[in-house]
Length: 120
View 1 (cartoon, helix red, strand yellow):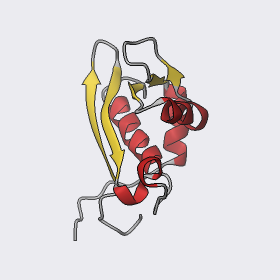
View 2 (view 1 turned 135 degrees about the horizontal axis):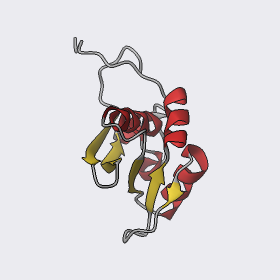
View 3 (view 1 turned 90 degrees about the vertical axis):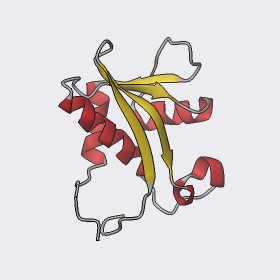
């Protein structure tokens, strides 16, 4: 992915001041990276990078890396629990998950990235 400006995934985030966490409203990898829907992925780690972006925003808001959101199904929720250290949250959505600052610190160590304004 380094050196390319092709969109590999998108994430929508909002600060939740009451919860002191960033809410991952929506996240999706590009079709060529979406193994859940298409059965293959051109680039591995796009989802992790989206979580790293969310964690960075959480830090900027003073939320210490805390995140929460909703997985699309139980399999994805369990994947996030196993691979990213997510925890199940007692909320209305059946696949609500959260990430502690400790979990997102590990995510940011593995899935680092560099922001650039260059779009040539």
